[in-house]
Length: 213
Length: 301
Image 1: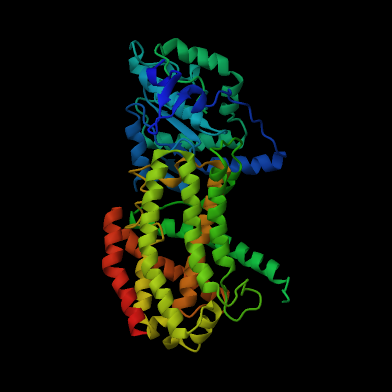
Image 2: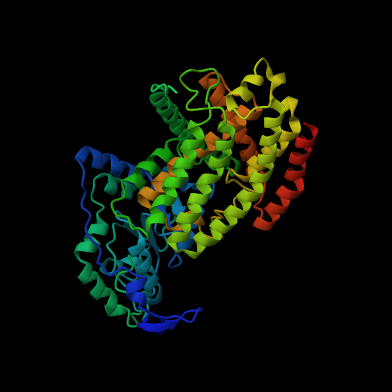
């Protein structure tokens, strides 16, 4: 645990001493809860349609695949016409694209960002590296199977997949969402202990709270 | 005092029309912006999908009471602005809740949402939100100055603080519009208009690539959906004020839609061809170019 996360006594600028416990003061201690579909089927279908037509991607590139996402914003591919947009903050996005290899160091940030997204949220693994490690299969510092650490809804295979493959992947993801099968956030909450154990198995210097909403 | 209760459903009908018109127009404007960049742009119904999706998000977290109230203040700023000025001149149904001093109230409501947002975003505790809201308040304050001067000039010109009477004085042909009877006030107000529409060159508040979207960084799900609803209402409500004060108002809905769209397009046309100003540049720009015109218009009246 890093020093600044330890419980300690701090002296304020006005001379008053007070106790700070960052893990309790700044972070939520509650584990994630399951939020099952709560409404009538017809309402949930409408919501799923809206979710599928409004995919907000978290602007977070982990590996070389990030460079395949940029052309999607340009006139040549223009993913906006399919309801796909990029958001700069995890709070507002509902789609996390793990673009390529994922080093253990980046995995920490990915977990924190993923947990700050709101239910329902989707994960797409882009490229072979997220399936079995790809060309980094024997690397000492990348993870091999993304599905062990985050619930993945869809893989787009290739090294690297072209932007067209990404567009096709978005269409497939829309089908999955409309069928109501994209419940990754609930899966994560249900198997939270298993995911955390897997994450801690590879991240040896775990210096963050277990759950950062 | 007797109050005509039928005004309330009529006002709600106005609100309904304006929300839908605002959503479609925002999408259309986004499409026009995309075409300038040689893209196809979002579908015309994209804003509805985004709105339903944000209302349908199952979990949400809060940072405190003001965090809740921020979007509420913002939305009430937009709705209040819309409901206290007449949408259509001479219409029994769509005069809304206008009264004798509504011009002053409108000036207040334009600022109200920004202040509410400042309190809410500050409580979210995100540094980008704090930076964004500081820039926003500075810029809006600077942009509000020429607008206020222009409004005073118009109020002096027509000797009234009632929007309805100002519109009434402009009827009978376009040569009676304030645009032609008091062009300096209109010029000052239109320069201020550029600054408050969240479009380039004055969009440093949101600054998508620099401080990831600024004030609403921490807002999500229903909070964000409230703010999106306001994004549909507020620009229209603001343009309604401009239309009533400077461009002769509207007497039927098609005229209303056309005038609102054309006034909006002024900021779009400027926006798509200009890069972004920094805050100190934009404040200087308002003080150097817009404020003197506003003062001159008051002096000449």
